[in-house]
Image: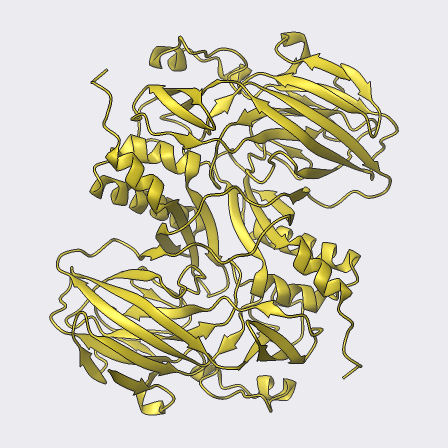
Amino acid sequence: MRRFNGHDPGLQQLRWRSDAVPVATVRPGELFEVDVPDSSSGQLSLSSDRRALERLDLDRVDAAVGPFAVEGAVPGDAVVVHLEGVDTADWGWSGVFRDFGLLRGRFDDDLVLWRRDGAAMVPVSGPLRPVPIPQRPMVGWLGVAPSSGDLGMIAPQVHGGNLDNRLHAPGASITLPVQRDGALLLVGDVHAAQGDGEVCGTGIEVPARLRLRVELRPRGAPRTVRARSPGLPAASGPYVVTEGVGADPRAAATTAVEEMIRVFGEHGVDEVEAYLLLSLAGDLRLSEVVDEPHWVVSMLFEEALLERTAATPRRPSR
Amino acid sequence: MRRFNGHDPGLQQLRWRSDAVPVATVRPGELFEVDVPDSSSGQLSLSSDRRALERLDLDRVDAAVGPFAVEGAVPGDAVVVHLEGVDTADWGWSGVFRDFGLLRGRFDDDLVLWRRDGAAMVPVSGPLRPVPIPQRPMVGWLGVAPSSGDLGMIAPQVHGGNLDNRLHAPGASITLPVQRDGALLLVGDVHAAQGDGEVCGTGIEVPARLRLRVELRPRGAPRTVRARSPGLPAASGPYVVTEGVGADPRAAATTAVEEMIRVFGEHGVDEVEAYLLLSLAGDLRLSEVVDEPHWVVSMLFEEALLERTAATPRRPSR
């Protein structure tokens, strides 16, 4: 089985280019492994602190590894990426950014570092108390090249990219519409945990080793990304729910998140801790989109995890 | 235990008025029952056909039962409505409306009638083949009166109303911010099943008997609706997923639904059947809301239910 070392900057792409030179050609059906860096592209580590976040080179964020040409792929085909395995590193980070995330402008930059403990990740520094978060790995970045020109790495597209969809978990198969000869698959940005919405802008960002198999479906291009996802991760009820209501989905989502932060506050959990936890383990749902002119956006959070958080003492002050 | 017969038009409200006269006053802690009509307010029955849908008096749709004054409630308080029981009737209906729903303009009006069979509902007439849908009852309409004036019944508000949130299931507790003395609680619009989003505009609309208990939390008004919901209904993976990507959440949701209808088509399921099934058992999630400028909206559908649908023969033509 071939393995590609995506920690090598030579295998990382900082723009999403139609004319990128493939690092390798993979055959449909071939199982191969790709080591991918965390979404800081190796700029952060367990020895980083908040100042490292301020020094972060944003042009190097969300680098993806590849591209891998898929033998025989032409525009109009579909490439199906089977996530046969996702092995995450034993450390990770989460960031709050003043200028990024659903509540941007409300929080200062801050950094949480995590270590793995069994099947969970535990914060070891930063503004979050040491509450264990169950690992539910997923692949954030997964896409084929655009038909022409180049794109930034942050915004996802109908042909994939930085979809940050927690349904893209081990065992999932993601179907992407090929835009140019060879497809030019890029992958990266693994999260050890992330909720629907990723509201603060990060999950638990980790380096990882991916085991991938690519399938080619001639003339099978869907109009937008499709996936087959295994059962959802095992978060279980009861849930605490806050419901944003209004004509503007962004405002409704914001209200749901703000109100859930207030719920956490009533349990003695700080705002920044709540914001981080909602990004890692809270889920945004579109509960209702037809009762004109108002949509209902729900934020769900597992009640038991909220209670475990409230019961976990803060670390001595930093 | 008091029981209120909401099939009596005298107990139904067709506008959401601040100055409505209460039909009764309930005490915090009191358990009481309310019979509520289906959302057509009794205009449809098992003997209805598509023409009945065209004759539907829309001013009588989504009537809610009450209002119930809550003893002692004043503005700034919270009323918590505990859904102690939801017993649904053994029949129901679902509608597709040309001028309502996420894909309005695409389908003609059509009507599906349902009968209960064990723990499932089964279509007995209309454009949907007889595939059983597991019952997952929920209360669609649940709100307190506005502070002044009156509102229509369709659009939900931060003080509740037609939230159509499937998390409002038996065992859930919904917290509403009181806007005027006595709160003036209204309830109605029960669905035997509905997905997140309710994309075609209806669930399986049923008459029901609600067993309710109201709790008063002085000065506890949240800014918007909150809930505590029991574990989510038992839909299980694997899921088929389609992902709308773009800056406009409505367009992204529409793309996700349209593309899932295409997936159903590839399994031999008609477009109108798919649209109905997505409304009853498909879920819209906000997978990603931070990777500017694009959101990712996922439509999820249980793969096994899609396969059961595809394997169920159509009824002889109507």
